[in-house]
Image 1: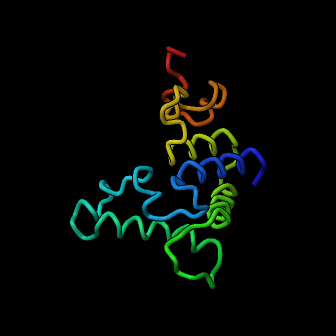
Image 2: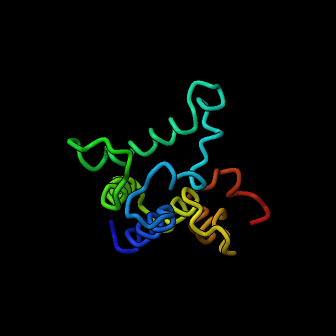
Image 3: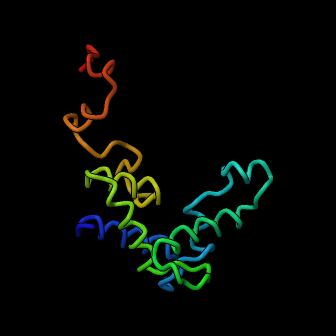
Length: 137
């Protein structure tokens, strides 16, 4: 993972780590990851806490196969998870958009975090053929 992406991952971790403990817990995730709309919560099959617990395990499982199941995600585990994610994303701008949208990193700032983070040349690579030929372009 390059330095630009690593900086975003560290920024996200710091934002999520509300109490500054250096570990992410279910309490840290509340308010950043909304489990109320998870299909299994909506269906009454799982509680929000169960979904958050499973979500935390996603980060832990990428770091160490012999890990201690402690319901805490360290900065190292978080970075390692995003190292794997980063490997599948070619464009730094898309990675930044994904991080901003995933963790609402720009909440409270007028940075249009939910808008496209690239210019029109980049857009054309990802648009459907019908949009490319649109007369408005």
